[in-house]
Each structure stands twice: as structure tokens, then as C-alpha cells.
Image 1 (cartoon, rainbow, N blue to C red):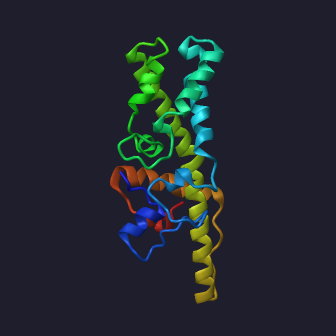
Image 2 (tube, one colour):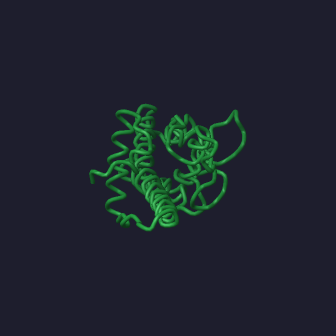
Image 3 (cartoon, helix red, strand yellow):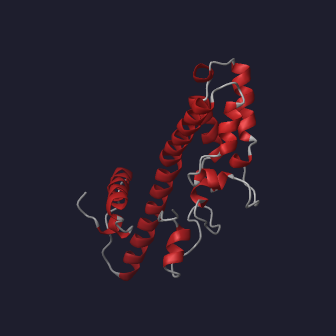
Length: 198
């Protein structure tokens, strides 16, 4: 829904906020954090999710046929970055749309359409969970650490006292607490900075 507190969204809300990614210094887009060249590649997570959900056991197929299916899925438009607005893309898939071409590709391996749909959704949910754990949380931690460094530097320059450093577990706790508050109440990102009850 384009509401994650990433530079792209924050810049849209307040033009004084930099639209640049804090990791690669390129202009951010709504899903830049998933595709940022300085992070673990999204295709690695897609492959891991394919191996976990669409494996020989789940599909009741030989390892060779499963490997061919994975290669076919990776070549689908819905798993590629392109600029054709009339075709599904990796961006539309990451945005939450279930690609019909994924379901059809699985269905074409003699699996019922209903089972193919169920497996597609399981795969996308698993991928989403991996993106959250391996891309979003590290992105937030690095952003929080950078913000903390900037804040500490600014406070040091403006006064003689400085803030005590925040440890990584404290940062993770703050992000986890804020995420719950954001989901339930749309609590602003400033909650991470202002919440001192950790």
C-alpha cells in the first residue's frame, strides 16, 4: 500500500526528507529496499522459497522435473524486472498480486488448478516471510543505526553531552514494538525515537 517508512514514502510526505537510500545512495522507490544492490539479492530468496515449498515431495515429481519447473518459474514475467505496464512483473508480485502465470506454470505439470493455486500462495507467503526477516528487518536496523549515528553526531555538535549508544538488541526491540503499533494504529515512525520505555 506504499506506506512503509522508507525514504521514498517519507520524502513524498515531507520533501525535506532525503529520497536517497541510506545504503546505496540511489533514489529510493516504494520497493527499493527489496531490490537495493547493497542487500542480499531477492532472487536468492525466491530460489530458497521455491526449494522449500515447491520441492519433489510436495509436487510428487522427480528432482529433475522440479528443477526444470523452478527454472521455468524464474523466467516468468512476474519474476522479472521490466517496464512493460501491461505485463505482470517482479514489482507487482512483491506488491502482493498472485501471478496467474505462476499458477498456470505449476498447473501445467499435471497438478490440479486448485492445488497449483494453493502451492502458489504458500510459496508467495513463504517468500514474503523471508523478505521480512532477511531484507526488511536488516534494512530497518541499518536505517535506525544510521539515524542514531546522525542524531548522536548532531547532539554532540550542539551540546556537550551525548546520548549513550543503543545496542542492536535494543534497536530490534524498538522496531518490533513499533511494527505492532504501526499495524494496529498506524503509529508514526517517530515512535522508535521517542519511545524510551525499553
